Length: 179
Image (cartoon, rainbow, N blue to C red; front, side, top):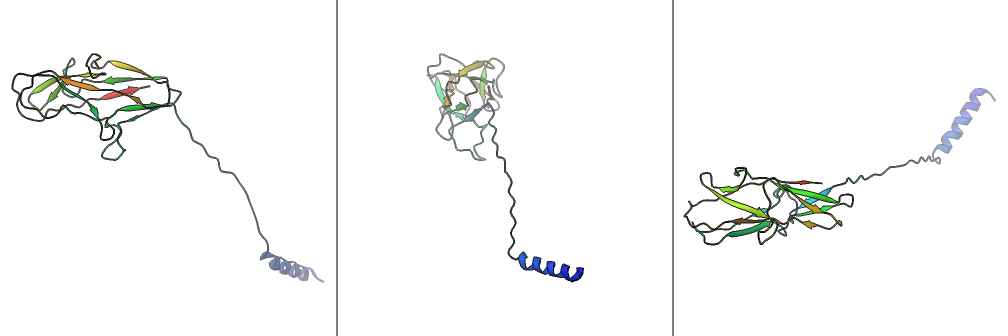
């Protein structure tokens, strides 16, 4: 038998075996998740484009006539449960909350404005109004577990016996949380 016959015989045998041959290869996939030390801020609402995470809620003093004899009180309410809250992982032991003077403030007083007239208001940590959020002052909160920590924000507008012009009086506050 010549070399070419051997080659043909070998090639033919390989072709017959080719239908029954199988190959296998194995490898690995690496999976990873990195959780950073941090906190998550929620306002009780489901996150949607209409309710982004940086919308911490509304301090709504309601609708009133041109004068009122008692302070007007409100607390921050979100479109969900009405609570501003923070949850941190165990590597965070505390965080601070700072609230600025708002768009209409004058450095020492927060003010609601209708574009022409302003009305002073104050912020507090408690409903009784005894523990205030001073402008730019950091307030400390301790983290003792992974549970939600409520961030209370109450507001008060003092009694007003002088008639004010009708309109919608607003302000926008920047709340900064650091951990």
